[in-house]
Image (tube, rainbow, N blue to C red):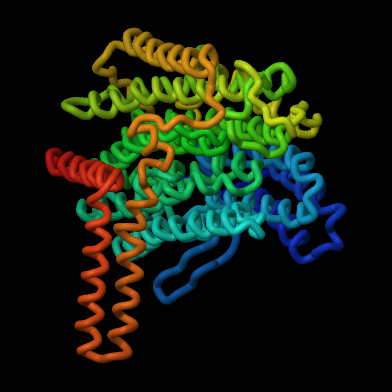
Length: 633
């Protein structure tokens, strides 16, 4: 689709970014003088951005499908010799899908935060960071070039760091913010190298130039760019092997978890892949790598979620897994692009709603997060229970709720293809649906059903309306958004001008059979959770559990592996270089020996205990990916 010049209300698309950015600037520079008006101002500006988004959406809907791409040039940005890059925005169905999600869900979370952060002395700064995040995320999805996308990409990374560590007087929270920041820098390095490669290969980094140059590009170069973009997506979207930061990111206030780490920022990697579909369509190897990463992550997150007793960390593992479904769909190509975005939109509603529900539970339970000390809350927090239940049914894929129309479509698309791919990718998606039903039912039953296991100092109560109303709105979206977009085929036709027509290939298993199988897996997961966490007594102290359970509690030893394979060797290498600089050649030899010795020591430690098992699992995954890529050559 060729984008024409923006006209009408779309010529004001810059206001989408400028309004929340203005709020952040006023609140941060105004300081304590804006304490009283700051939260309300930030919330109002976020809703104003949503209002402009609605007007632009109406304009697009009134245009012919082939004309729904509009380009808004703002000014000459980078004039550097023969390289010239304008700063501009791209308004099309893909970017506007994200704009509506970001501004609507983001504004609801602003409203919720008015109640949740009411007594926090630094709430003005909190709302400034929320506005900064919304502005950066909107810039990311509206940019017309990879370089401007990178500016928004780094902006949401900064906002995430500031919000995760908002209560940085707690050393654990500050450490969690640092961890998220550093892991994301690994992904950002891949994205930045991809952009440099685009410049060298195509002579530009705007979408139009890159897409036009793909047809004549070297296949190896396109594969390299696709894999480097995937590295960036893995960092931002917490996908294997850069997923270790997401669970710790729950240290931030719960509205942060709902906005950044459930509904919006962690979906940026999916946006990057779908926006780069022209590149991925020209390099099946890189696209297969995207699908494999998604399949591995959806199972990884699901297994971890089964063993978490912290309600927010269980939801974080669920987010990781659900984004794995989106990445899997994006890696399937034309048959899956639209469904990746469809599930992204429905997930934004039901997962944000469940995170806000978790915050409501914490509000009524003196900030406790251990589900083993919950139970029986359905009787005293009826609104929270009802809204959470709709999100729970949606993520399980129970018809007719949203997940049934979006996630199940990904499962069907995963079974499309030839050879081993539909059985491996489709099988992972199908098994993941059953595990999802188990761990989300476990979470729901442990929190709201069964006998009360409360500590003596808590007196659960329903949250105020300013918190429950956003939860009710999100619950309505969880129930009906999929029904509005799924059976009608509206999402496929809406996105077709950007990602192409949706493929109509048939899966290797008949769709009615596959639908029955999926529902059986879901019913089995619910039954196992009902028997183990509603009908049976839930111990207030977690039992030792099996080997797999103990591994899942510590995220399958991902931190131990990262420390053993990357962090400690890096420390030894740094010390060796410093020693070499101080002692010359002899010092270099000694430093190198120290580095090798330190690395050997770490590897020996990895050979013991469960860390060895996890390391072997990672190695097996890498070998499987490389083997698959070799087979399709």
